[in-house]
Image (cartoon, rainbow, N blue to C red; front, side):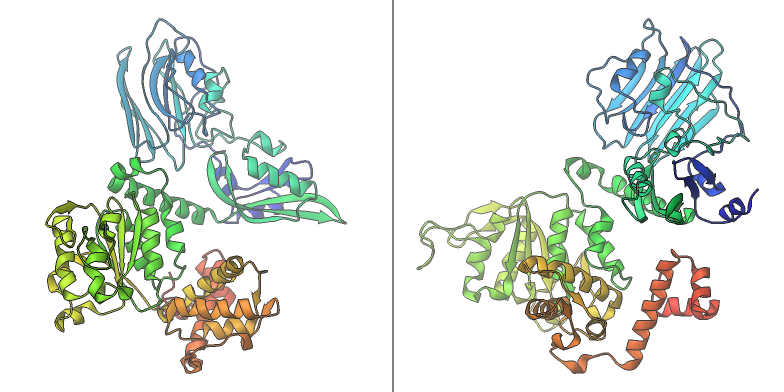
Length: 605
């Protein structure tokens, strides 16, 4: 083994190296494992192809996706001529190959919302069961099991010899690289032998012979043609795997010699995929009925990053997302400016409930008009009103969601009527005795301490308990220093677009001034200050003197600033080392004891 190969094999990254013609020159053990170039089974089978009367067990989670480009018409060789089956549908089948006299046993599920599909039958006295469930395909043949787990989609194809009933082929991870997808095999393609020690040798072959992915191939072509310098940490789908890779060219005297293709730490990738799979399973199990009714669902991670990336508020964000998927009332608490209205609107976007979103600012309604504005009124109820009567906010929100911002401002007499709406799901307009049914989800927000308001007699205890069953508390910005960086970066992008002006950047001193401020007015104050600086600055650079803070005394102490900088340095080092704590300790030159104490102190996970 040459020195380069030895170094590559010692890496925790999956790596292969291409020459200037796209030929694979080196590949390490991690990459071979990642793409299934090693056989994983303890059993063997010989090379071959489908023969007439062979028994085929097929379980495909999405026809045409990561299955050798299987087409609905390819199922004809199994005796399946169902015009209702389309590309993208899931299908499980047990059938004879190329024998029109034998009827297949099959089921299919339209679309990509599959949760469970199962076929159980007996062929020539052989019991066969194929199941798709919980991101797993499980095939039982007599006492043997064949299992493939998947994230997006996968196909399992098993072939039994039509004469002996013995298993002569089964799929394993890596079938795309081996050109053994279900579509390839059903269209007459051959499969290679399997044995416990078999390894597919790809060195000396063009990368496209074994690695498929449109964007991946496009980017490699751009680098080899000199159109792009490099690609780093790009997301690709290669052979059905969701991966992150860097494409790094190596030049000698100005001439391209090699391209190093390096994938992020395999353990990190596997953990990310596992986390995403677990999240999907939880959502599918808890909300499968509502999920079928939704046209589009915003991914939980996208929802969470709307509010920053720091861990201080992470539990609140996750709680908000989970509650958004339940049709329950939610009380959002927090200081002024912490983003309560923004969170309420975000919940309305991702919730299964359809219908309008009606926002009511309770602090701006004249006390004498509360009842008529909230619950509506009938013709001739009082002077100066619409003579034809009017529906209130709750009727307008019927079938949808009403957001009662600053609910602590509602007068006591209106609180009684609101409690009736929550309990009985009806409203009665002013001047009428007719009860009008309403189906409304209530999101409420307050910066007041409602417990204290109850104790002072300004807020009904029963209403408080009705509203506070599910509560999300948004912490102040001063408790979320990492989120401050995230929010500043977001605003730097958003504000110029809002006003149609060119993008501007913060100087180091301006950024330090923003991050060392205590922000008593929270996100709203930060947005106002930064908006003023960006709009009024004549330069493309925003300097510290352009940042006009309301109260300079709220600047953090030297100790707090040093702690914030120390936390920032540790986070940056962890990102540079892709989460590898040992490398981070070594880079920072600190002991394990000190390092883990700092992680605990700064709440870094």
